[in-house]
Length: 341
Image (tube, rainbow, N blue to C red):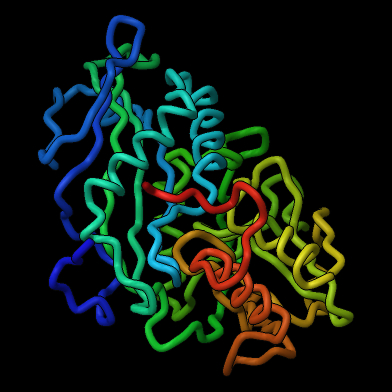
């Protein structure tokens, strides 16, 4: 398959319109058969539920060209499961998991010329999303919904390599106790926009949020789960009912245990123990792992021994192994790689 005439090595991480996207509509209590379209525009009433009450959710995953030339996606079944659970929490009609994966396959196959070549550092970012579309003025769920999937080629999240970043402890809460922090709802990200812009204005890359109940335990950042490495090489990830179940984090935990032979702990992490860790990283689909060099706690700096120049050694092993699996350089666990045929 020939590729688009694009300077793949210099792509940034922004939206570019591709040729096809998938659309399905829910009306009269059922989803229609759905299908591909070239139309990237959405028409809706000014009183659409999504515009009034933010009834919307989304997912994010990527397609890759592997070392041997195959086009693959990474664990789309977990994205399907997470979106199904999110829809239930938001009183939306779930899009069946097999149909979700079929929609991903159709979109990637139809846009295969947009899948960046192996070794370019670029990938095809895939965005499934769903929202309430009929007019709703009283506070209640919509009756009609739209499910869509588009894709866009993106460059590496970090140009020139993943250099350690500095994050700050936020005075805001990311999620309410017993709220929606564990689902991928658009409203969670809207709430994080002001805190992240405040962090940027103060010279920080991200916010680290503490638990909303006691503000004594580490939760996550505005858009990524957090992982720590102890001085004796153990991987530790925070556990909480208000943390999004990151597919990247879950995959890294398995990589740590099964490929690197590391001990892994998923538990409550108290903020006062953070200075004792050797490494820290933020993990998610976009960057895989963003190394953290410092945490600023209202002027007090917590500096990790891994430093500000490069990823710590364990974080680097985790990153190289997971990206090697995604790109076909390393054999994957069964079911992790979903080939587009």
